[in-house]
Amino acid sequence: MILRVILALLIAVHSSCQEHGAFKVFRVLPTTNQQLLQMIRLFETADTDRADFWHAPSVVNGTVDIMVAPEHTDQFRQYLEKHGYTFQVAIDDLHKLLIEKEGNLSTHSNDDAFFLKRLHDDVGFHSRLRMGEYYSYSVLSTWLERIAENMPDIAKLIKVGTTIEGRDILGLKFGKDTPDKKIVVIDAGIHAREWAAIHTASYFINLIVNGREEDPQIQNYLDNIVLYIIPVLNPDGYEYTRTDKTNPRARMWRKSRSPKACAFDGVRNSCCMGVDLNRNFDFRFSEIGASRYPCSEIYHGPSAFSEPESKAYSQFLTSLKGRLEAYITLHSYSQLWIYSYSHRKFTYAPDIEETRRVAAKAVQELGRMYGTKYRHGTGPEIICGSTDWAKETLKIKYSYTIELRPGYEEWNGFVLDKNQLIPTAKETWAGVTVVLDEVTNQWKSSRVRESELSRLRQEKCSDRLPGCAYWLQSSPNICRFSQSTMVRDCAKTCNLCHMIAV
Image (cartoon, rainbow, N blue to C red; front, side, top):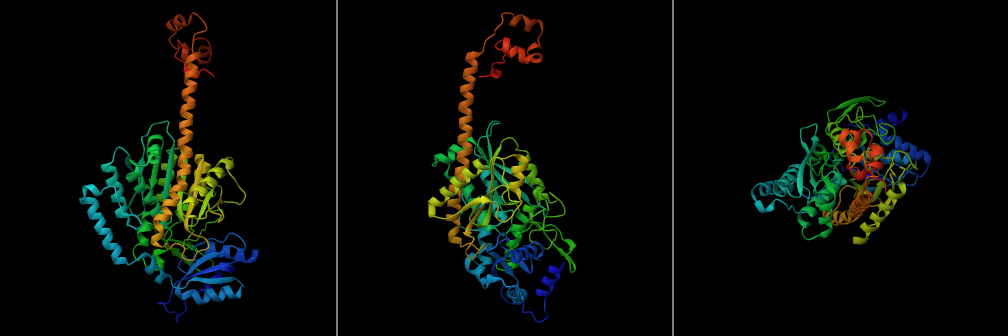
């Protein structure tokens, strides 16, 4: 409570505030355990409208990026100086940077209207969407629908669920589905402001749809696995970030758009909209790296799966249990390839060696394209989210969170240069193919192995005793009721060759 009082006093709105000032991003370096703990408490309790953490504080001497509203920058700077933090102003004017890097709002609106018209009217345009751009959810969802309508042999439209504002959460299912095939799921956009992740998932779809005939690797995937791609898990939040794209408060919105919830924050009863959907999964719910304050950007919601988006997605993933071999969720930023578990340091899943081996190989392959350096490991920011839940609950073999460009040390954070969008997507696909290859090759190997075992069983299949046909005629259910005995003595007559041990 003391910290909340300090924070409230620190960033209280003064009547002399100038609303036209600039949103700034501070890069703060906690150099002692005390500073780190104080920053973690601030991270878990801060009102997003005042101090929006772009990076969670996790280790001593690890930088933390914090966006601060214009009316609070002076007080926040004084707070850092008072407590001896090392810091820099990483972005002096975020509004200006958004205009520079992400373009003009009206231009985007015109582009959206243009592409919607083409998607509806141009028969030959159903598969292609110009990459390197950010599109509205209307454009993306219409694009997915057109692909499924015109390419039913490779793609099927899926509806995961419906958002709090009534939007359908859509994705595509690729591949020829049979009950024995393994499944891979890729998603993005659970955090609204992570536009680069949404673009990367869209790029994957575009690549599969338009590269399947020329690229034998893609054709291999379509033939041998089932691949789901859901480019935007949080459509409401994503659309909100587009309402005023050069306004940092809108553009940097992270959560869903669920109705306001209220809680006493130590100073007053504060009410805010939205839930961090990635903290709403039923894995170590509300324990670490999440907040019970609705105005926090990491507010976990009133209970696990309280939100329609996370509840529907968990049900979708659960419906694939037993066949779901890999789950990859795309985020930004930091250039990290993260695997479970992330709720506590030095806590690993039982198959950590295999998970780590594939992650290391993926990071190496990703770096071959442009030399981009990724690190891999368990969640360094103490994040409990969808991948940890999937690993623990669904026992998925390969469960990864990928934090895309830019790197942790770069200044622009979520505002990625548009000219980096396609290179980011290309190199990420290179890394993802390592996981897809592992799943595909293991399925092929299992098919070969099963075929060989079947051949051996057929060779060994015979009746040990001469009376098998008579027993079956006398007692039609004997093969079922005395199965173990009949496998041994009358396997051929009972058609139990597939149960012979080899």
